[in-house]
Image (cartoon, rainbow, N blue to C red; front, side):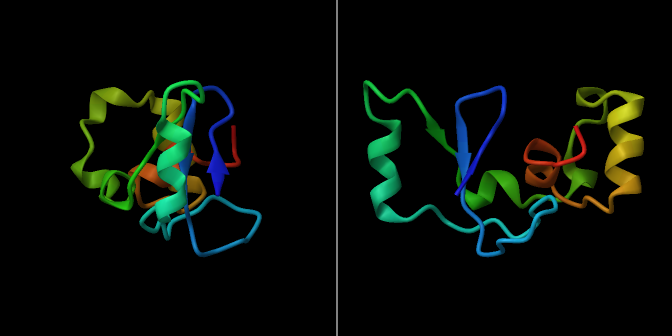
Length: 86
């Protein structure tokens, strides 16, 4: 389970490495409770996180963010959202 540092977003990945995640998975069934009233989290699905960066509107990221994504070999939208290079 990955938690975003600045937004109430949660994602799931099978890989437990220290770097940014690129292998997002479907949330387990129990994760639905985190989106319920009172918790306030948004559980992001792998279909939202795994699209390639080439599918992203290029105006959504700054030049610096694009350089960082390229430098760290980040290839997915989720990899940008849940990175460790910020």
